[in-house]
Each structure stands twice: as C-alpha cells, then as structure tokens.
Length: 142
Image (tube, rainbow, N blue to C red; front, side):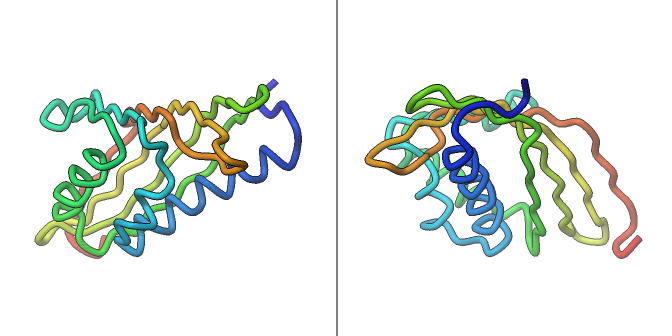
C-alpha cells in the first residue's frame, strides 16, 4: 500500500515535505535545515561532486553553497507514498524544479527515497536520497 499508518502522521509528513519545498523556493536556509534530524544523511548519487553529507549542520552548509547554482528556483514536491510505522516512516516523493542559469532555463524532475523520524512529536527527515528522472534545458523563457 502506498499510504499506510495514521492519517495525522501522514498529514504531518506531507506538511514536512511541503515545508521543505517552500523553504527551497524562498532560499531560506534556517527553515530548510529545520526539516532535518540532527543526525540526518542526504545522498545525491547523480551529483558525485556533492555525494553524501551527514549531520544537519553539514547538510545546511552544503545546501547554502549548492543553492548559489539555482538562482530564482521554483521547487515543488509531492508524495508518491508514505508508510508510517510508529515513530518512523518511509516516503517516496517527486520533485519539479525550474530555474535559470545564464541564458538557459532548467527544468529538472526527480525522486527522493526518504526515511522520516518522529522526535518530540515532530516529523523530520532522517535520510533523503535523490535521483534525477528527467532534465530539460532550453533557451531562457522557453
């Protein structure tokens, strides 16, 4: 089943994902970092120059540096599945990003495989692993 577990937990996890996406679009590092557990791990296998980063502080620092390459980004995310078991959950989510790099408009789509944990009543990302699904690069505005 793609959506299992208590509805209130699934809603909170969906709101975690939406908070993450909103913070990316606003380029708000503190709000974005607050979606991660202290001992989280972020893997980007399609970006070997970034690889895997461990720990909220290191993830935030890497993200701040990486975001310099995504000016004016519009980031959307939605879940494909959320499976809750107690204070842990797995989620598959999809992303769509649009941003400009020079004279080129980039449209990237991808998938995250996530584990989430409930700490002190709040859901956070424990692990996120991102893979590209589709990339489209066209002259700016097209």
